[in-house]
Length: 379
Ligand code: SF4
Image (cartoon, rainbow, N blue to C red; front, top):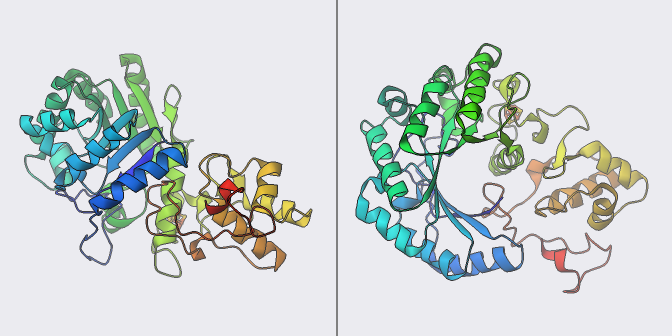
């Protein structure tokens, strides 16, 4: 896990399954103010303990603030400065060198197929396959540690072994395989990206075994198991669940638009109030503590977030579920259902990041109004 520094939600591609595409067609407009980088990064390192940072978007390399963001991370001594990018701008050697000089150490590059038919068909941008490949070569030549990300979908699930050969031949040794999420572009183009998991799993599982044998270090994220077999990979499913939680909380409609349409294919159903079985909603994603466990604790007399934490180990990692636990305690005490989507969270809480500035949790840890001697009180 790392601190996520989001520079923009704009992008120079329009990938079929992009979760950031608004389904109402509204344009992306977010651009982070560079003045916020320093305090946000300082808080993330010193208050929350992050030592690694992912500079992300949208496509962060489109922003004129990109180099300033890297330099600020470097100035604050982040150990790993990672960019999550489609890699196109790194096809320009001077751009890559400048990023390296500013302090960039790692790049996670989205590459969706081993040929231009699959990749450009996904990104809807002719030539993007060649640009991204050139970007990867330039990054490696500049001494930047590169991993490739692939979203497993209808276009590529039968072609993942050649994909692994391709990234290996580029010189890449680490990759991230991600499952689909039912949001944004993936919802709009669901007929083009979703596939029958039972039918697809043997292909995907075989490619995972192939990649592991090849020597690739593979991280998987959001591939439901079964039917997928992620043996030999490192799973980062916590991050996938946090992203589901984030998107669901941002959706400004009473019921998620994907309800009853994609629930059967949804990895995140256990963090969704529509998809989870009664009582089984996961409230603390890091440690997997469910609604029924917390309600039981309240019935046994636990009335603060701290007491729930001490009894269940919930909310000990990133602290982002403290607000949910506080609301769930109140719901149980008042005999109400609990809906995490009704929590008023700040928009800066993106991608499972830990920035929860603005949350009011007075009294949630101690039962009294806490002071600064209660360091978790503002989280
Ligand atoms: S379980 Fe929730 S997030 Fe998943 S498809 Fe259904 S409504 Fe959408």
